[in-house]
Length: 88
Image 1 (spheres, one colour):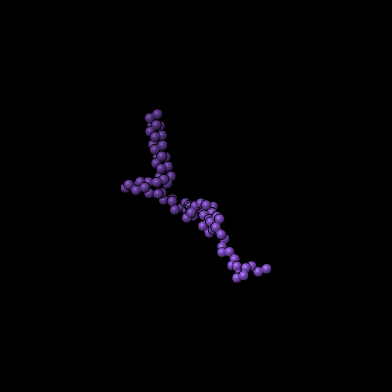
Image 2 (cartoon, rainbow, N blue to C red):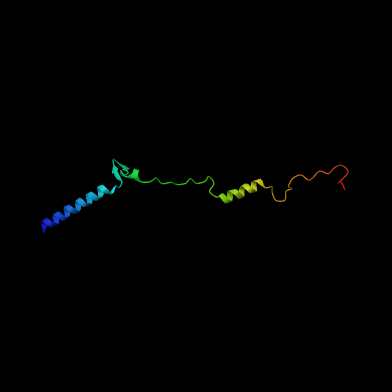
């Protein structure tokens, strides 16, 4: 019975050691966290760049407002009246 328990304990310890060495997790060496040797096999992740101004609808409205004349302002110079009044 004692031999069976020792054998089982040794087998479980060996399996745990094998699992830890094969799993490829991060390791700590001299205070540094290092990746596993498998990290180069993973596909790269892509994060799209965000726009400079993330609120596009609000930006377009602000640009429209900046170009448009203020409310109630004349839309340009009135037509010039020739000397002697309007032609008939």
